[in-house]
Image (tube, rainbow, N blue to C red):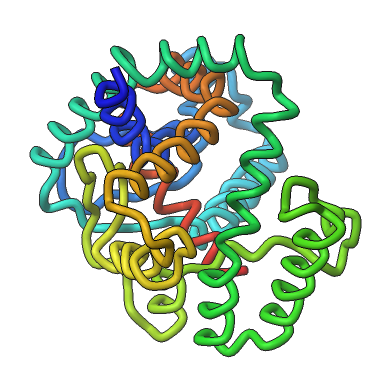
Length: 278
């Protein structure tokens, strides 16, 4: 029984690394893609109803369309997906694992464990990952952000009882800074490379795969004198607990989009770009 639970938690450990995020996008071909908001096409009936003699309306519409296009030109995001077919198969595998194992377990977990306890567990692990955020702030030359990260860690670790509570969140000057090595490489000039959907581990890019180095060297859990199975079990529980807050969002996403794989890919890249820009 213990081995079964350990295996289940291990599978859960990485499934939640951004595996599902709310975003609507449709792609028809592999390769590079574009993420941009587009206006809905006007119906033929609406076109026929336009007053061709009203020059003012035509001029206004043209001006509005130009401004609309300019507004979203800067929001186009691109990434290559040369492994489209393989990535898609891995996504289907991850999704099957989520539906068959992870989601039912998480539903039961939510019923048994109160939200306050689950939130305390989440806060503890976020606080524990301070070295990853702090070191990458320094590598990116963000001295002020590094000091804010240290102040947040100190306050939450002392007053917040090892991060279970988050008193630092009451200070606007101490915002969270989810920095990692993938973002550091982006600041240094590296682009995304190409998209990768890892089995179990979820979505990433060639550049962002460097985050695994953070986990190996800077994650305090890796410093503990524990065998690899125990470390995986701890990490699995952390990710499983995090997933317990995301089930409704995942279900809503899958019902809303035409192609969940593309939605996950789009949302991942957009989210990473926003983090890098902060």
